[in-house]
Image (cartoon, rainbow, N blue to C red; front, side, top):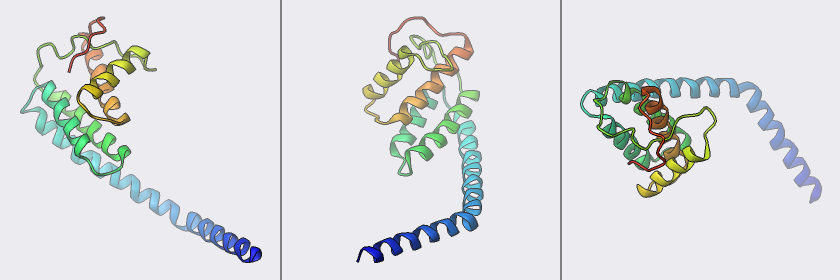
Length: 155
């Protein structure tokens, strides 16, 4: 019985190695192409939406899309991140949008993490993706030079 288990595991391992050698590059190429195609679609959607709304509307739509997404957390976050970044590029300014937003740092500070975490909780959106999307707001506001040093929260 034990020999059967060992042989079965060895056979499965061999099959996995064969698959990895012969099919992994093709799978990766297909995955990368799919991601690039989706990024193009979400970028265009973001640009179109941004022409019709303000910055707060962009954030709201991206977070709504994220919360409703049934794909993996990774795919949902990436797609909505592409949407949000392109939407921000052309959206009308929202009065007070950057008030209370902490300054951006390449390595997120505790203030940035807390700001994003509590805003996500307030909107009842769970998951790391929400915080990453709000980090885009932090970076966007910092690039505008309009950030406030206040630690207050702004939805």
